[in-house]
Image 1: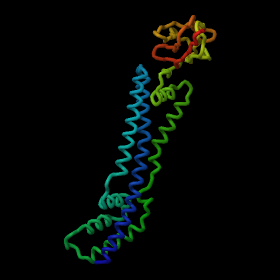
Image 2 (image 1 turned 60 degrees about the vertical axis):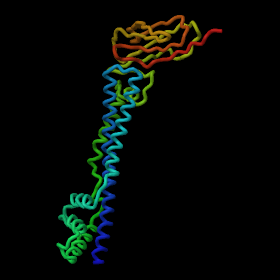
Image 3 (image 1 turned 90 degrees about the vertical axis):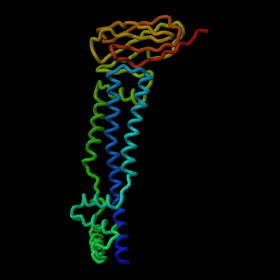
Length: 281
């Protein structure tokens, strides 16, 4: 009887070690699943921002929702793997699944251990436990529960694809991600092309100054680019196109208040520019 208890204890201890390895692998798998899920959620938020005209406050809500969904999905996947309760039967079935050569002897041992009747003799139970213990000590935890390289393919592929797209010429993805993850009221609104204010290059002017605003675009022959000027009120000003230079310009005169400038064409906007006006003494 003492030999049976000793074998049972050793068997339990070995299974607990295998169970720790199983949980570690499941936590790693949860982390790997959360990477493409997080990237997918961010990409969906970027697509929504691209297809709609969201103001700064709406982008703040979108950013908060994106962060919340990413965090909740990660916590759910990781907590499910980290804190799910496993008894010996669960561990035994998992080991049997990954080690079919055990031929369900481990399951039988766990069932024998929990038996309260005298259906089987103590000698038979002791023999089964001894044989199973020998089998278990021949099993390496890393082989029973391996980290499979196929689990890394999807996260790495998505990181590679998104990273490549972000650095493609004229790709709006990096700007869209900035708008979603770190919203700022001065952010540009990209599209299939972009607008950029290239002058003025200084941002402080004396009261009553005249300023020429110049805008460039990576799309040729745009028509109807508008310069918006926001002070105490917002007013539009149609920009003049210079075909030879491929630039748009607009002239502002007698500026007497701090203003915010941006160029716009359809749904595409340039980054907003703040001009500070210094009062004359």
